[in-house]
Image 1 (cartoon, rainbow, N blue to C red):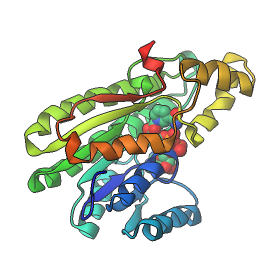
Image 2: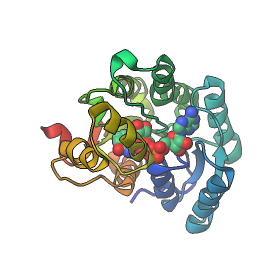
Image 3: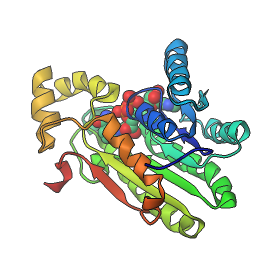
Image 4: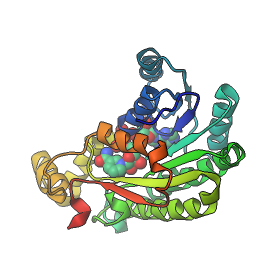
Length: 262
Ligand code: NAD
């Protein structure tokens, strides 16, 4: 397992789901953590304190809104000023909205592109100078099976995720000689609040029951017929932070139960 003692990881959208699993995995390897994301203050504090007590590292919360470039830069600066460096950046915050394109609300398109794609640009832009200076870095973007294939009614999400796959390759090439890697991880369906919340809209858009959405839409895409777990995604991210992964860069790593093999 990667030893991240003395390193700092910033994980966007880590008050819940996959992001929280990343934060806990990096902390288990010794990294100090900047968690980020929305939620009830008492819930966020509970997760933050649990990271510190479970893994004997330090953890702080940045409330930066991923639609606001200045706040994203501020989150990186907070990590650097609190812990001395930001060595690992995981761009993970994301939202979903499901609708036929002709009814797709313009503000939902803008929000998804901002949170799921542009925030990664802003975070990387702010974190790379410090990583270059120290000669080490790991940038991991949570993409999706939807960075490789599409599904109907998810125009903004699929566009953002295809975009993040391209951003990943571009950044990897730019930082390749600085011992900084940049990869994206593309999960299939992971049972998190993001997936749970899209079920009612998918029921409406496709005229299906909840059980039909789970079995005939979500798990229909996954040959294993099982959800991916957040912990499995986090274990892959942790591997990417180790020395064994130093030559893995610019890749899009699927963890999707075989979805995109079809
Ligand atoms: P989630 O809803 O559990 O977590 C999303 C996180 O993003 C939360 O911490 C939330 O507070 C944060 N967030 C949302 N808007 C924000 C904003 N404006 N500023 C800051 N933080 C904000 O969802 P999840 O399923 O864990 O998703 C995490 C990532 O994984 C997303 O990028 C998502 O697209 C991707 N993903 C999820 C699945 C899945 O099946 N769950 C599959 C593939 C990819």
